[in-house]
Length: 342
Image (cartoon, rainbow, N blue to C red; front, side, top):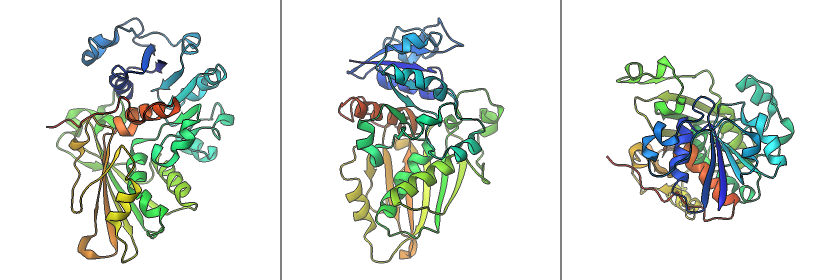
């Protein structure tokens, strides 16, 4: 059994980790930390876990975490980088669901996240946790940077086009929409139902911190920089990301076959039949990215539709997928989930 600790178990990604891990047959949950809820039962805060765990939240305790085989950080940016070095030195593997280790260029990371990095020496070692790109590196990793939700949907949507060189690299557009849970569980008046209900808006158009992460992914897949326009939007729903991606492509390329071949052996990417329109509700609660392709008017512009649950394939589910790889388990272990309908 893999002994697991979770630092920051009260947020949305933390409870998603708990939901997935309590039914994982190869995992033993040993530590779940929360400074604000220390001493309280996990199932009292999250009644959906009643009957699945008797654990209580505890104060963060480095010695207790060092007894784990792996520690997940479901914390705000800036926490994992302060605690990871000691855990790694003790032989504990780490998966960070925040952004502390995602961007390899520290100057760019510090520009977007507004803080000095606490352990820059570990950044080059961190493996970016997108299995469809870095599966073999993840298997051997001791430190994994779990991807952001927008970067997961956009990267998987664009990847086949870029790896095969059929897209114009100067005309990539990612028009993305997210549910409000992507903003986290903290109190924020802008996320109140009265503020988000019956409304729809773009935000961070001048620049979003996920843009450099997406650009880094695409450049690493291609071997050169790309030009990307990324615009996020807020939807009046709880879960889900819908990425509508645009690219100019060469004529005569069978894009449907290209995508089906690229993802044929990927357990969590579903390339839908031609003409499909994937819905966010079809992946709600599941660890799947659903993709469909369109070529409006049979022109040279391809439209890729990519949907995920931002809390599962965009966060906790992908983290569990990475954990499985790191410990030589079946990649699908604990993630055989069906989307919730209606």
